[in-house]
Image (cartoon, rainbow, N blue to C red; front, side):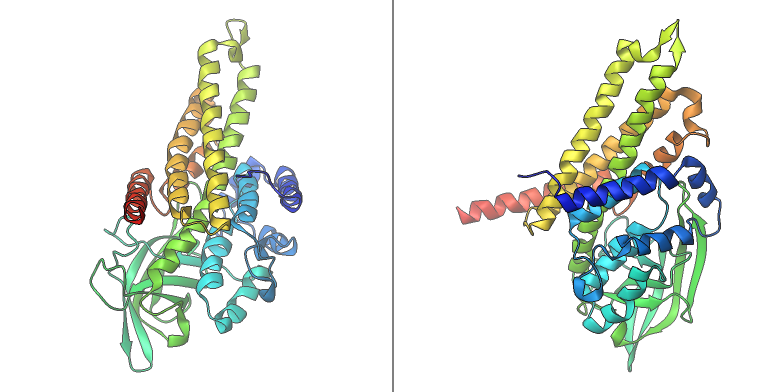
Length: 387
């Protein structure tokens, strides 16, 4: 398996890395986290001008036909610089849903605005009491004449505080946890009956709890196939996990680099603490966690790009490692920095908080460990029957 980047991907990585080094400081992160929007519109517009927002879309829509590996390259650089612009929510996740499930009319209507940087999107899927089960829905969409009527509430909808459009999962048939009977809808965030209660996550990201009270949506707003929204969500979330994992890897790498550099300058007993063997061992363990994450990330991206049937298991394994390694690296970084590790002046505490959010997004370590085990069991059963 070839883990090397192509020449074009190396150029993309270098260009994003250069932008992050020049613009994405901890001071900027502190400033945007305190703003009402939670990111800079001017930076988002610059991302559009640089072509980064068009990366995953097809050439027919003005995109670059980007792969999971391409998204990985951009997201890793963003993770290093604590970039708070909603690339994961708007471009990777909602853009992925439009690219995979949208009709030609929907793509022509919505994708150009995402590419131009003039529209924000949010994926509303989580509900109170449903855990991480995408099929456990209380939100319903009932057909009434020529429209669907949407009722329910979604929690922890990242980027919903400023979203122009929402992709909402709702049950249109079947029982409360059936895999079939789930449909995705494109909902204008300004529609009558949509109410948002904004929040700020621990890492400074903005979002909202969203209430749908008799919201009317037309059949033209159905995203994908009626009653078959779950497979579409699962496929797009797998792609999103690669971008999420890449952002986490960038964040972990920054923590490792900052910790190694700090221990070279911090002195105790007349010498740098980097010379203490016990601390060298801890930093070596941090390095191993970073490299384990990198290997699983590359594997997941390659499996997705190849259309492998093992891609879902590879993405599940990646999410388990992101949660476990992110927690370990962040904790060690804070402890080796001492009390200053959690101050706003250093990036360490900010990376820590972002890694904790990424560890829970779309499913935590336990959820994906069980999913990986279930997928392996299915693979073993299929192999037994084939034999």
